[in-house]
Amino acid sequence: MDILSEIINDSGWKGDLLSRTSFYKPWGLKFPCDKSAGFHIVTQGKCFVRYKGKIVQMNKGDIVFIARGLDHELTSDPNQKAMDIKKFREIKEKQVETKNPVTSFVSVRYEIGYAPLHPFFVELPDIILIKSEEIPTHHPLQTTLVLISQELDRGIGSDILLHKLSDILLYYVIRHWMETHPTDSPGWLCALKDEKILSALEALHLNPSHPWTLDSLANAVGISRATLANRFRETLGITPMDYLAKLRIEKGKNLLSEKETTLEEVARKVGYSSAFAFSKAYKRIKGVAPKNHKEKELKKAS
Image (tube, rainbow, N blue to C red):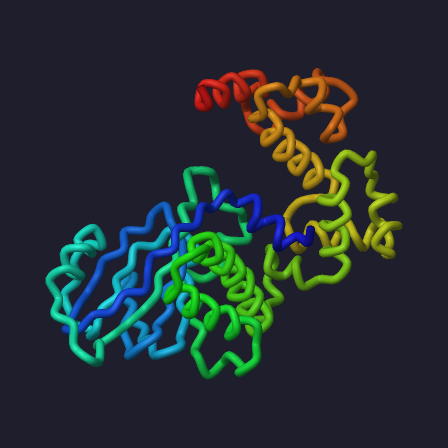
């Protein structure tokens, strides 16, 4: 699995696709999103996104992605009042349908939970707006939008297909934004575009239990030990071996949630010689003993 896929896959986001909605008179909705992320896709007409005192216009075919928890509003007019999304059903039931809606849009919502966001998501802008004219006719992003629109008009089997398509849309939107917004600033966005750093990250993620050293990792990606150490630190603010230690602990943390797994098994799977060595590293990085974390997870599950 490539790094971007693993970051998104491990984020634990739970998708919830709202059905396509049409409004036939001036409207406005508030989206309290401190613990969610997602998309809005305009399929008819136009609307405005209001957030942090800013206003962005969206037209037919435009996509806006809220990369992390951000309260925002969608309105038919820049000055239109907005009501809470919880009253969504009330609005829908009271409106009188006419031939041409003012606006139609699709919303895809992801619950992002309470775990700390991966630094990659923190580095993304508050919103990512992709204009329809930016998307070539036969681009996979355009194809995905067409498929989502088609599935919303169907019944049998659409739910699971829509969830899968919304995940595909997430990947394409982030990839498109990265390809069209190059950066030299230190951080994950830069790391994913540095061929050697990316190769090092992929090697570590592919086999975190391997007895990596700085020398063996440098040999694996084809650069000198000093170059790898310097570029890795300059880009991600951490040494390759410190990154590996944190990666192993994160992998171990996920394994601890499995009911039948022992500390010895977890330690071995993530590259530690013993439960003692794993526990020592876990406490140093997480601040608590892994035993305490496992007991907490088991209580949640029961």
